[in-house]
Image (cartoon, rainbow, N blue to C red; front, top):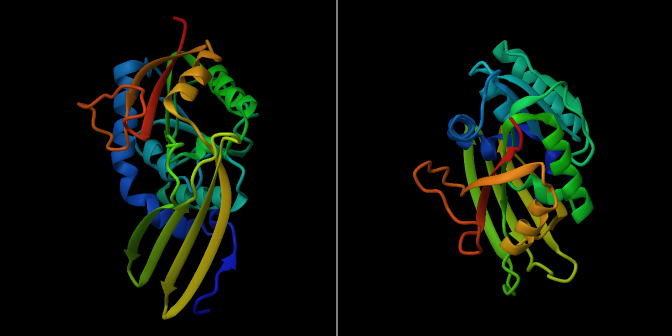
Length: 263
């Protein structure tokens, strides 16, 4: 397979996807708990993860005695998450749903969606519908921790990120390439390539998709359209509790803390 790639959604190979992102799991879980304590009222330690993927954070929060719900559109990811929970002896409610149209069971104290999955919602209407669904799922005073990257509309070159991770005899090389964002269509083309070496054999996968683009002004406008949620803090992907940031274009890695209004 030298030089060739399978046209395969990388969400269909959850084990390899998992290896790329797993090293941040406990740090992210620490941060989420801190956000719930600092800005919310986690009375029942109930959590919801839209687009929960492979279940990294579902399992991490369940291990910390949170009552967890999670949903995703990818059946391979959900199957992987269920198997992960079964191996650990933990439980959670996992279900298939869309980010812009879902219903949690009861209300939760904490919701979270990191690593830019929010940008798969390609219209303002769907982004707003997602935030409204989250608001309905939160108990009054509950918080939504939402992480994604802002776009630089003046950039005219491709950008690239690369990760190399190893687990025993398995090596995964992940390359993400983004094309310049289009300020007119609010779309950004992205490609992921995975090269997996396992048991002396190599497998390569390639996935293309579009993200919706945002700058800080566009984020603020979207948030104003969902009055049930108030923006109470901004951080970045360092998850440094001592370093809150402004919601501006100086930092592209954005982590918003939104709180459900009410008492």
